[in-house]
Structure formats: structure tokens, C-alpha cells
View 1 (cartoon, rainbow, N blue to C red):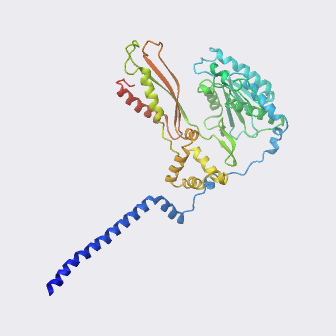
View 2 (cartoon, one colour; view 1 turned 120 degrees about the vertical axis):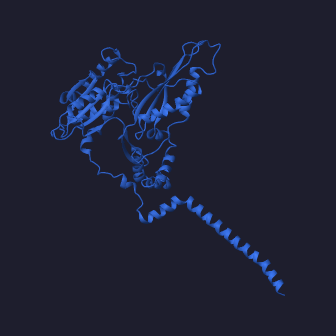
View 3 (cartoon, rainbow, N blue to C red; view 1 turned 45 degrees about the vertical axis):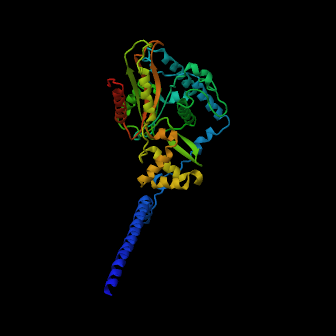
Amino acid sequence: MSLPNEKRGLDIAPARRSGCKSHLSKLLAAGLIASAALYCCRDKIFDDVLGLFVREPDSKDYCKQVNPFDASNWTTAYDVDGFEAKAAELLGGAVRIPTESFDNMGNVGDDDHWVVFDKLHKYLEKQFPKTHKALKVEKVNTYGLLFTWKGSDSSLKPLLLMGHQDVVPVDPKTVDQWKQPPFSGYYDGTYVWGRGSGDDKSGLIGILATVESLLDRDFKPTRTLVLSFGYDEEVGGPRGAKPLAERILETYGKDGIAMIVDEGGSAVTDKGVAIARPAVGEKGYMDVTIEVRTPGGHSSVPPSHTSIGILSKVIVDFEDNPYQVKLHRSNPMYTLLQCEAAYAAPDAFVPRFRKAIQRSLISDKALEFVTEVMSADRIWRAFVGTTQAVDIINGGVKANALPEQAKALINHRIAIESSIVDVQKHIENKLAHWGKTYNLQHN
């Protein structure tokens, strides 16, 4: 009788072991699922736990505001009837003087294109007589204007206001495409039309008109005010800004200026609140010319790719692979985002995104999310990252002759956290690839 019992025991034992394995498998599976859930939600869990010990970051702590300055005593002159029309005409008159600067202009005295600046200077003297009389006026390298309004306290470093007199040239073939002629200076009651109305004769005229109105009221500055106006900013400033900078350095020494206020930035009503957006950083600048040279010959026996064809592939490669945008906390655009998150209207941001902006102060993951969302805006990307624009291209001389060379100029605006060296390495790597692809020597 013992054998059947033993047999039954042997039959039952494996069943018990199978049940244990089943429970263990379920336990392991549940553990894996829980681990996966914890991993997927690790950032939220970490944030929630961190919130128990660390105060939630507040954009207002990052974007602190000073008490507003009441300038009403000084702005009443700008509120009177007729002032806006008068200001528009001051700007319009300057716009009507076509002070174009071209890339290939010769030196002052050798190139007649510069002579038009004499006309602008006479206009400024006529419109702002008190400024020209009360302030010391120097002409640096003929057309650079340097005004100095001496302050009563020589221990204070001067304030430097800057602008430029020149404008980007107008292609004569496009004149009929303008809503108003490019040098009309026409005022339609809202806008002044014409080249320079925004960049940068509005700054030039605005500064001089302000000084003139202060002189009308016998204002005496405590701090010395310096006005510097170049005349070839649109081509890099070698004849205007550079000599002016050297003159200012010679006069006041290194770090001798309290603050520079140049063109750029604006005051706007955006996201339900008035926001002043001064430009407090400047991207780098570099023009790169890429030239492809191949043997010439007759077009009736062409190679697979001409120099123009190869250059086209290179250009497409550059445009299809733009520089990656990465937002750093040191970037002025990040500061702007924090200020908007702190003070913009409640409905200006989706709540989750506003919180992400605030969390990005301490969370790299949140910063990546903010960057991804904002990168959908083309203009925002251009402000933050390094940009590239193919602006000039040429090659070939005859319809039945193979082009022996083709070249393109790519304009770069370099992110403030990057450098010229970074851009050079990026370009070198791409050109090395294409040189190898088409068996071209790369240098």
C-alpha cells in the first residue's frame, strides 16, 4: 500500500514545482514591467521627489525687474500733435539720400560712391543745428561722425550710442517690385518707406532728434555722452567703424566706456505684456567662398558632372544639413524665454510648456524639450544657432564651353557659444568628403 502513496507523491511533486515556477515567472514579469515604468517615468519621478526637497524654480527669480523709471517729464514733447509727422519727415529726408555701400567699393577719395555722404552730413547739420553747435563734432576718416557731449562729472565713464549712416544697395532690376520707391522716404501715416527706414537711419535720426530735443530744454548731462556713426557697416565697417573704434580707444582707453548701446533689439507688446528686448549679445560673422575647378572643354563632350554640377551638390549638402541648434542657459534668447514665462499673460503659453521653461533652470531634460519646441520657429532658430545662407553664386562664361570654375559665397552668422574654428572644421569635413567623391584636390 505504500507504493501507490509514494507514486502519488511522485506524481504530485512535479505539479507543485510547476506552480512555483509559474508564480515566479509572474513575479519576474511584474518586476520587469514596474522597472520599465519607473525607467520611462524616471524624469517625472525624479522631479516629483526633488520637489519635496527643493523649491520649484520660478522664472521671476531669474528675470528680476528694476523699478520703472518715470520719464513723463521728458516725454511730453513727444506727445504733442504733429510730432509724429515731424519725426517721420526727419527720417524720410534721410532715407531720400541713397547712402548705399557696396562690397567692392574703393577707398574714400578714390571711389565716387562715397560722395553722397557729403549730402547726408549737410542734411544732418541743417536738421539738428543745436546738436552740431553744442556738441564736439569730429569726422573720422572723412565720413565717420563722432559727437561728444561733455558731462559735468568726469569721474563717470561715458555712455556710447552707436548707429550707421549707410544702407544695403538696391538692385535696380527690382525697383518696380517695391510697394513704394526704395528711396522715397514716403510716410503713409504708419510707416516710413524706403531703404534705411529700419536699418539704420531710424537709429541715427532717433538719437540725434533726442539730443536736439534735450538741448531745447537746456538739459545738462552728468555723464559724458558719445555718439558714433559709421558709414560702411553693411560691408563690415573697415573704413567707418574700425577707425571710429580706434579713435574712441585712444581717447578713453581700454574699458573706458560704461556702456555701448548699438542698433538691435526692440520694445514690443508681445504675449500680452510690454517687453523691452535690447540686444545684449552678438553672433559671429564669416563669409566663406567655395570654388570648384575642373578642366574645360567643349560642351558637346561633357563629363558626368561639370564644376557647376559639383558645386550644386555641395550646396545642397550644406542646406540639407544645417547646424544643430542647441540652447544654452547663457544665451540671451534663453533669458528672454524666462522673462516671458515669468510675466507673459496666462494664456500666452500652454501651462505644461511654461512649467518646462521654468524647470529648465535646473533640468537639462526640460531644456532639451524647450529647445525642441522652440526650434519649430524658423526665426527663433536663426537667433539661437549658427546659420548659413548661400547668397552669391557664379560660374561659366559661354553656352557651349564647359565651365572651368564655379564658386559660391556662403554667409555664416555664428552662435555666440560657437566659434569661427568650429565652423571652419565643419566646412573642411564636408569639402574633404566631396573632394574624395569626385577625385578633386581639396585645399
